[in-house]
Image 1 (cartoon, rainbow, N blue to C red):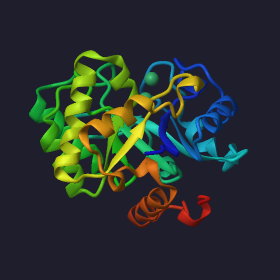
Image 2: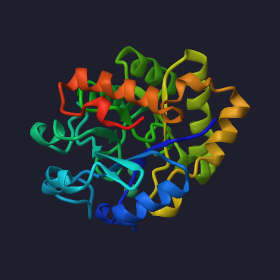
Image 3: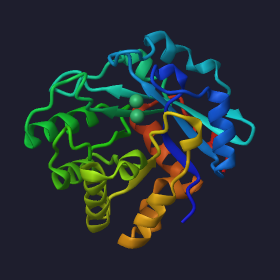
Image 4: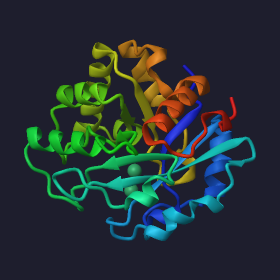
Length: 249
Ligand SMILES: [Zn+2]
Ligand SMILES: [Zn+2]
């Protein structure tokens, strides 16, 4: 399986990441990618950019060299009802959005209630996936979560950073991936790169997919055609301005 897309990348704007958009595009090309989603942390995280950063993403070209740049965010879930840290007019200008339960922005509760909060955040039409739902600091009922994503026609992020971190984070990432295979739920692979050299380096994810028999048709990152058809689905859901046909095949 060849990974062509990385849907979770942080630039220097995140405050604790170290590469510019240009450096990210260069490393993405080296890694053989055709598309990266810029997903800098939302304003509720300390050191993250303010709301105007997300409003002004339009100044970034749609492509740098051969790499399509999708302008997005990794939003923070800021209350137990799944509220997010960017207002609606800004959200509707984004081409892609992850939402994350970060324990420094919201105190985790028990697994049942955390799962409910994540699924509530997913009810927002602009949210494509929850970032790192396998994070052991925020206990989640993984099977209930995967079923909830499928019911809402959303994608499950498998986070490359978690896999390479080892320990419980990696073990829960494997459980999550197995659950997606068993239930036939679509996945997205995100490097969660905080430096350009980590963009699109999905070798450990590829090994895991071979081990567990991940069907290629469930992996949105392995085909531009599949990803474009997901973006078309997204555009219909959000009535947004991303035209799937503008993403080069
Ligand atoms: Zn970060
Ligand atoms: Zn992230």
